[in-house]
Length: 313
Image 1 (tube, helix red, strand yellow):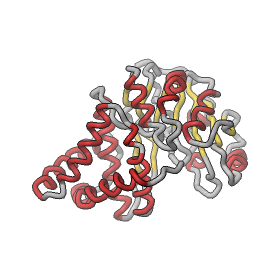
Image 2 (tube, rainbow, N blue to C red):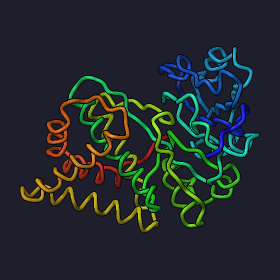
Image 3 (tube, rainbow, N blue to C red):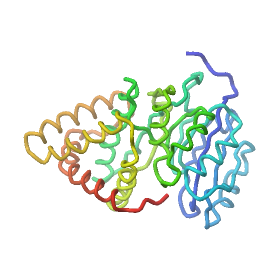
Image 4 (tube, rainbow, N blue to C red):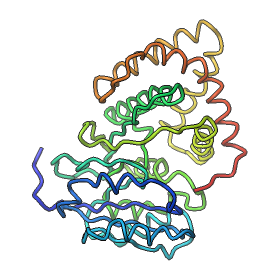
């Protein structure tokens, strides 16, 4: 792989809305590639009503390469992304969220040639049963995400960590279902696959952003309902088959023999993922067992709730 020059052909685009009372990890941990001026940053205000833009302008005033933009498109994350990406000067855009800890550089010195790079994500390890269960689940999800992409059948990605060729994203915007408030990542993946664009994972710890677990069961279920609510709009065969298998395997796991088989498969997946992620959790077998007990009900509640609950940004 070729090393990149000092100036990176990349613009970081992050949409935000009503974050004046939230902690912003980017303030305390600005990526080195931004601090040294290698890449520019566009923070796009999606019609905030709480003075979020003024707060961010004060926090980032020392960075000449960080701009705060105000979307003039209709309200919604996808429109905010479009507004920022249209104004990006680089050939590639780095997409993430405002509440994520970003790596110093997402591409680790690798020259960019593929149309969509799926970046690895890690979940911050925190105390408490709920956080431990989410962490085990997240390692399994990320491992499955990367393995599927490595074998040229990507089925998942996250808007918290994507590198995208700018023109390809803009060309795919009509396929992102802008009428739906969620799914800017999965609909993008589906659109890229339909158009036979190049998709690859960057499975490297140095490229990983860090996300934070939900702190309440209510918050976790609301998040998963939001994910499930967009599933009816999927048309990609790989994504549909994977989703159907997840639902079916968890329903079958309600029967003891299938529960044991699924538990073994889950443990193997998590242990495989430990080889690629900075994963310090000790009680993997026990936490995976507890997760397996609640997961069938958790999947069922998320699926049913996602079908009836109206999504919000």
